[in-house]
Image (cartoon, rainbow, N blue to C red; front, top):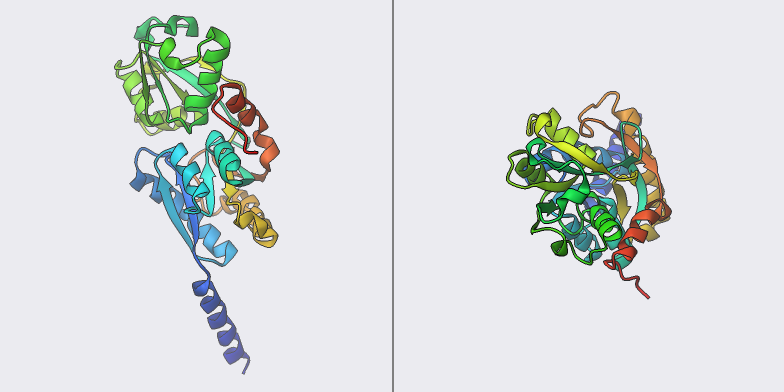
Length: 287
């Protein structure tokens, strides 16, 4: 009888799991292409499905701006997104940060500006009149923070006033074009540069950092405005995320190299990003 009861309980749990609407988990494009990105973050999606006892559908969105719009439009329930993209989603649609990813144990990273060693450029003043690449306009390190820096330092309203040519593209493309000598310089972030060097995608000797930002809050795990109303779910999600570090000890594929887990954070941790957005006039607070 006990065996029958246990079997019934297990079958009942599986039935409930199957009936719950899948959580739509959006992830930014951290890897060179969508296929590799999906493969990289599928273990995390599977882990969350198991811990939350609910199906999870993983979706890579290829721009930070696009991911912010996706969660705002209700197409994404939870998202691992860059800080500026998160601030946009919070401002536009009330998305809420519940945790921050850790990189080498720290909840912060840095925006950088890189150039080729043969460019002759050693300081940002020398970038005037040069070709330059930013990330997409939803990127923190690729757009918001360097733009804010140029605006404050050189009193320019738009980047096109300072550079001879401006591109807006993916972080991986920026490093590739700079190291190939196709661009004078570009904006990136330390984590991406480190990963591309370790994966043999660029030659470290051909990528020189000439500027580094102050510490920035790492990527946010955020929930939609609708989902954040479910306090029980949010608590379960935060608990699952806080246990990722422990899980990594036996499942090293759960996160990419150097990522060591999550720490519980909320919207206040991203205030410096919001302030930068307001300062450059790219964030209009909702009334």
